[in-house]
Image (cartoon, helix red, strand yellow):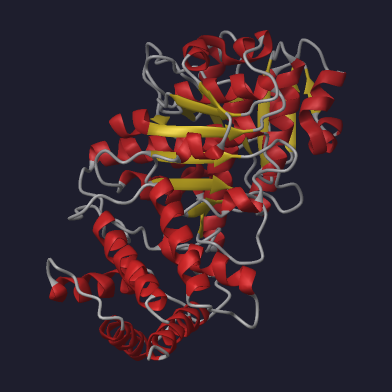
Length: 251
Length: 251
């Protein structure tokens, strides 16, 4: 159950504060506690408190921040919820598979699940910050869950998985990374690494004739998917720095 | 999916019509259609319609009745949702087990799921009309889900079970890579890539002070784990070749 305690729900640019209250109630009934609000339109409000019912303590302890970086910078695993399919497919799983992933994270991992705007969801930019996209397999005729209801479903799956894990503590998953030798990198470390990678491409004058923008997105997707640990990242950054140095040694 | 179409959600003495709208939306997003209201305090209302969003058709088609008998008299299987444990224990299952039960019903069965009052749930009398009680395993500190959120969770489990029955919901496994835009690389492609990577390390005169052998093993583990696709590999090989070229341009 401690894992639920560490799990962070991040709501971005929520316009209706009633939905923030509903989210708090959904979270508390499922044993989650950490709510982070990125630039909410209105908060706190009486409406949010009313909808939160006996979960007002979660609203009181909610962290309000201005940027996504503040919300997830220290996280090792980030999920984005998404109904739409994007141009470049990202690892896409359902809430149950997401919960299974969460339960198999190493001890002490900080994990965030991002929820976007009521009308427009997450931006492509935000979705690219995520390791996985979670999609609730909804009715194609009308796939748009209310955001509070979506948070309820995801938190429910997290709780079900936590309960299942308590019942059978050995639950290996497909990642095989439960007992790892190095801590996994944080989201902000990953951003720094990706910037370093891009800089190096510039330094070596690398040019993708087909589509330079796609290149960056594809490299990002590749390295997010692999869940790098710190030693691996240090090794690759060492390689990048050496490349930069060698290229600059030229006359 | 036809089974979902037949599944009936019965709301008894609902006091807040907003919850009826939320229920309609929850149902429609999960592919359910049949809503029955037993003596609602207020219905129809503008509030219900607003909360239903694009599920207003379910409200329009909702059946309003005066007694529980009218609501479930023709059903072969009836579930009651309950947070509390009653004096006489009843067969008590969780939503997932309930969904599994529903999926194993014979063709053409009529099935109802009862939801009680916002403040007091179902009466003992009503609960005794049910074959099974469904309990969402909530946080003991605060186990009271909003009724719309509870309907969302139950309908979600019904849909997941129906999809599982149909095979492949969003993704059959946790990798999330079943619907990928590029074919994954073969083992021999991967070996070639890793050799190319090593060659490049030599060309740039990269040296891991700690343990050169470990470096190669760790890079191998990293790239094997990520399941690279062909385009990603081509991009990275392009980067490696450019690095080699730039370094050799030196006098």
